[in-house]
Image 1 (tube, rainbow, N blue to C red):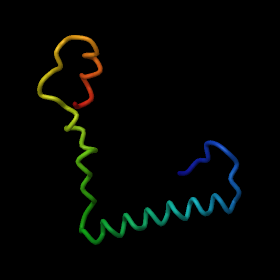
Image 2: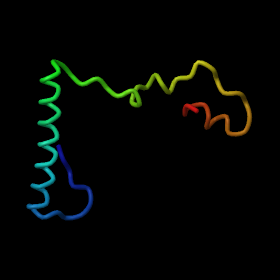
Image 3: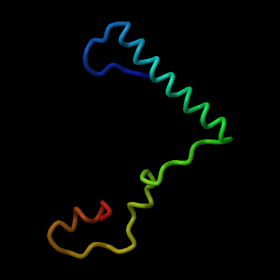
Image 4: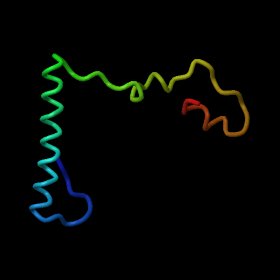
Length: 70
């Protein structure tokens, strides 16, 4: 479902935006059909890369270093 959050698009603008979204979805579906399965996610989107084996040391801004990798 697509929802217009801000602004008041004309019917032509809305149709153009939907055409782009549909074309992108069709291209993604065609690419996954050719490869024989769903696309493998990129490494940057892997949640396990954020997990750290060593906890940050206590000190200034330790709370900020506790989540984001260095």
